[in-house]
Length: 66
Image (cartoon, rainbow, N blue to C red):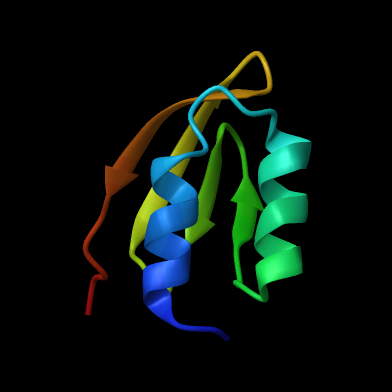
């Protein structure tokens, strides 16, 4: 995985992009993600990208549970 600042920079600019574009961009940058439901999780940044109609509408943080 690359530097987490790359993931932060990417995610701050992904609003409005399609799910496919976001996944491809993450793969290109070597950033791991988990795709499920209406979300795309980026574990290294503890971020969730929220999608509606296949476009990113929000970015939200989460905490890992023990």
